[in-house]
Image (cartoon, rainbow, N blue to C red; front, top):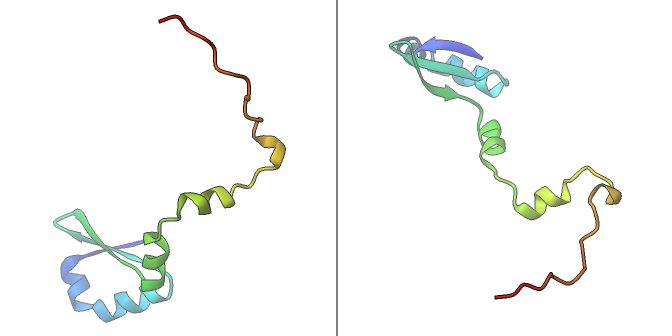
Length: 80
């Protein structure tokens, strides 16, 4: 990722956007501090989408035997 100062980014915004669309995001700094990132809209959508819990479970790469069977024994008795 290329770092560029804010004043340079203002002068070359069109080139920054073209680079982002081509797959090369740019990091914008102000007074040496990292402030913003220019990236393509497609990449933004990919990063901002949070999968549901069901989608994460469905994507589990393991085999059926990787997860132990649930213990079906009755709970223990306690004296209160």
